[in-house]
Structure formats: structure tokens, C-alpha cells
Amino acid sequence: MQKEIPYKIYLEENEMPKSWMNLRAYMKEKPAPLLNAQTLQPMTEDELSKVFCRELVKQELDDTSKFILIPEEVQDFYKMYRPAPLVRAYCLEKALGTPAKIYYKFEGNNTSGSHKLNSAIAQAYYAKEQGLKGVTTETGAGQWGTALSMACSYFGLDCKVFMVKCSYEQKPFRREVMRTYGANVTPSPSTLTEVGKKILAEHPGTNGSLGCAISEAVETAGKLDGYRYVLGSVLNQVLLHQSVIGLETKTAMDKYGIKPDVIIGCAGGGSNLGGLITPFMAEKLQGKEDYEFIAVEPVSCPSLTRGAYAYDYCDTGAVCPLSKMKTLGSNYIPAASHAGGLRYHGMTSTLSELYDKGYMKAVSVKQTEVFKAAEQFARVEGTLPAPESAHAIKVAIDEALKCKETGEEKTILFGLTGTGYFDMYAYQRYHDGEMTDYIPSDEEIELALKKLPKV
Image (cartoon, one colour):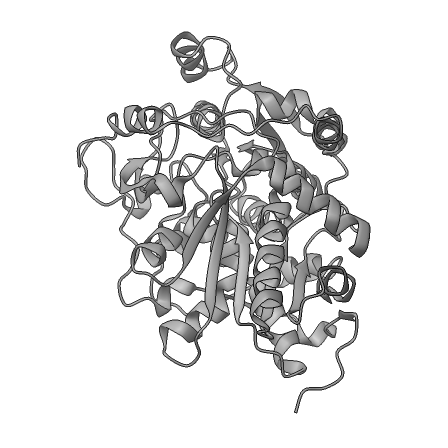
């Protein structure tokens, strides 16, 4: 029998996850391995350790351990902002007039403003344990860069961030938060790296992309003694750390006898969606329960809905290993949309494999429709969502309205990955009627896919 549901469900400290959950361990068909771009052979631990921290490489390659213990120091840090609340969107339900029950897991209740801190603090911890001086990284909308800056400050590490140029210009206050935590922030592509110079020569006046910024961060880490590169999405290790989102969500729902029918998340590289769905997808893979999973991406960067499932470079400069993923091609540079965190050409190999096998579906949405949904949500639920999160809100509203038409009483769960208080330029563009929707042509995508590596 279902208990009376409060507006916000908070877990006790002792109900927080003590281990991360490894979704790959539940998959019969594992994600394809990362390949060395020169030899086309699976990347070894030694090869990856030249780029990433040793312990993170072990997590990246682990396809069998169902749970990996969260270090005690990381657990202690989590206690500053976790457990994060699971919220029943009563006001949104009433405004929509839907019989559906809508819940969202809110990850914006920390200084970085998003879910990214869950992995940033883990990666900074392992860098410190290895005795490194610092780390390099990329950031799109700035949420990952902000989170990593905060984590590095906590552990006394240097942090060098390459921020996608259009976001660097659109979100100056996000940049200043990073600098407040001691990070060095550079707009990408830049003239500080060889790969940056090459990209600028091939794409004059480009606004950049996550793929460009990744290339510059990897090159920089390789040139500096005592530094390694860290990534905020895409990699298996990041989905592992983000599993705290799903584990807390499932614990809270189980506590009140709630079972979601539909689980929705925005999808750029796949970190928040992968983290949210992990324990639910594990049950589906084991045949214990059935859920509908929906990944939501922008029409301007539709890797799942219009990309190819193939091996591709993880970065525009082709300095990273090859990953088998749903991709638009590493040379594809998305339009300068305001959801900077979703402007990545590919999708994590784990979610790509699950999507390819039919365990989840994907939809793409226009940014004007996304901001309309964000505004509607803010007016009734009281939280201003990040543009990335608003993609999930848009589809959650769509699903709730379908229930209104059919009379079905579905339970809908989505991830509210962060707040939008540093995204006011985007909201201003929307309110002033200056926001547009860019949909790439088939020819544009085909041109980028023609440059996929021959594997």
C-alpha cells in the first residue's frame, strides 16, 4: 500500500549510497571497448593511464563489478549536499490537468548548481591520491567546469578549463565562479594549443564545441608534468559516479511504494541520464521490472536520433581514443544553442549500446519549445531550470498531456540536473523573441559522417 507522498522526499544520511553501481555489469552485451586510434586495438590500462588517473582507468575498464565502494572522503564530501531531494511536481500536475503523477530528482542544490559535482569530487580525489599537481578538462555550459573547480579547490589541485567559446561569451558569470574557485579558464578553440590552432584554421570564426575543447584539454595535460585529463560525461567511469542519482531516487521511491512507468533525462554525453536510470535499467536487464526510458536531445545536435552507430573519435582534434557510439561525426560542430552541455557529437558507449538494442528510446526537441517548457515549469514549481534540464521537462510535460488525453495514470520521473540562474542571457533571448531553432540538414550530417575513421 502506497504511503502518503510528501512534497519533497528526503532520505536519511544512512540511506545514502555507500557504493556506486556499475550498469555495465548487468549488460549481457557489453559496450564496445575503446580503441587505440593508431593500432585499432583495445586500449590497455597502461595506455589509458597516460591520459587519465590510474584508479579511474580501472573503473573505466571494469565490466564485471556490480558495485564499487565510494571512498570515505568522497562520501563525507557528498554529505554537504546529498541526499538530494526527490520532488513530487503537484503544482505542475495541477496546471496541466493531468492524471499523471510527476516526480523529479533535483540535483541543483549545491554550489556548482548541477549533478556534475558527483563525479568531479570523485575524479579530483583520485588525482590527489595519485599525487598529481593538477588536472585539465573541457566544459560546455560551464556546469562541469564549475564543479571540477570546486572539487580541485577542496583537494588543493590546479585546474585548467577549456570552455566552449560560445558558452564562454554567453555565460560570463559561470566563468567567474570557476575563477573564484581558482581555475584557469580559456575559451576554446584557442591559440594556446596546436590542435586549437588547427581547428581555427579549418573552421574560421567557429563558436567551438565540446569536441574541440576536449582536444585542447587532452593536449595540454600531455604537455604538463604531473597533470592528467578528466572528463565530465561520456566515459563509463562518469556514469558510474553519477549512479548515486538513480540509487537515491530508487531508494526514495521504494520507501513510499512508488514505481515509475516512464523515466526521462536530457542527453548530451549521457552522464545524468545514465546515472538516473542505472538501478532501474539494471532491473529491466534482469527481467525483474519494465520501464520506459526516454533520452531527450536538441534537434541541433541529434546524435541518438540521427547519428550513426560507429567507432569515432571522442574529440574534434582526433587526439583521443576511438569509441563506438551513436555519433554525428567528430568533425560536426553544432549550432551555438543555449544548452551548451548538450552540444556533443556523440553519446556514451553504454547508452549507445542500450539504445541500439532497443532498451531505451530517444526524441529530439527544438530549443524554443524547451524554453517554453522551462518557463512554464518555473512559474508553477518555483525553480528556474538549466536549459539542459528543460529538455527533460519538455518531454515530461508532453507525456503528462498524453495521459490527459487517454486518461492513463502513469507515473513519470525525470531528472532536473541543475539550475538556470547563470543562463539568463538565454532566457532573455527567448523572452525577446530572438531565439531561433537550427535543424541540421541531412547533407550536413552526411558530410560529417563521411569523415568517420575506417574501423
